[in-house]
Length: 298
Image (cartoon, rainbow, N blue to C red; front, side):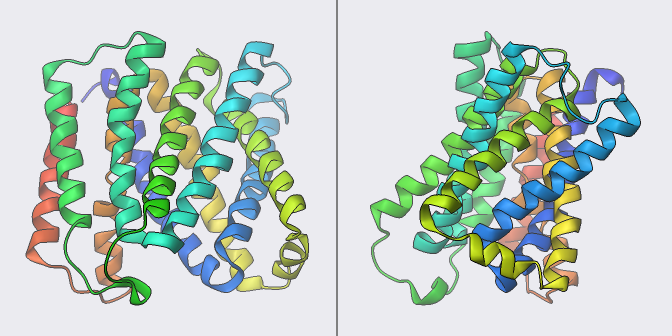
């Protein structure tokens, strides 16, 4: 392994960070609500990013970024953090987590398409093979038939499908715009710009729907705040910064594919922490997804 694989390694690190984040935010969301978690995680990450900038870069805020970076990274934050996550978390409610995660498997091909259209990226046959194996493995895991979630059965509502596609599109557009706006700028400072834009977007949403009292009430839930701190560190702070480093060093579609193995990486914690039973099909899908990631390192 050499530094020529730095982007792929960063994408794998992103997926590992997001595994911790998913577990922390799931538990925090059950206590204070997923929409409140969405806003507070960004505020927690902003604190970490400001401290990191002051200690490492000597600049607590990314004031050295160009207008080009502020424009496109800000747009990326709104697309990924605000619009994409709002659609995704609403899709969880309408069609359930399993189908929502399956629709998020559209992120890698969408990223590859946007990378080709906007950034002139060209993927090799080996890249496409690795992406197909990884997305196929993830889809094999999340498509496994399970008991109806929250009593859902019958026809899947189109509104939920559209929300899931909107979540995937928001994530893909966010990554592509990040790469376009970032250039060779510091990934942590670039993440800070994205987080600022995303937090402002959520602040506007909370003002419109009148949910600020729920945010103030969440401050009194210390276990939830502890989980938010853990998730905020490994998610919007470290994980997203690694994701920007990944797209800076490798093709956007390749990075998104490796990051997309989250449904596979979350299987071991589900077994160890939640005592869930994992079927042979889930294990087979995990092996297929890992094989696809290995191909992407070729």
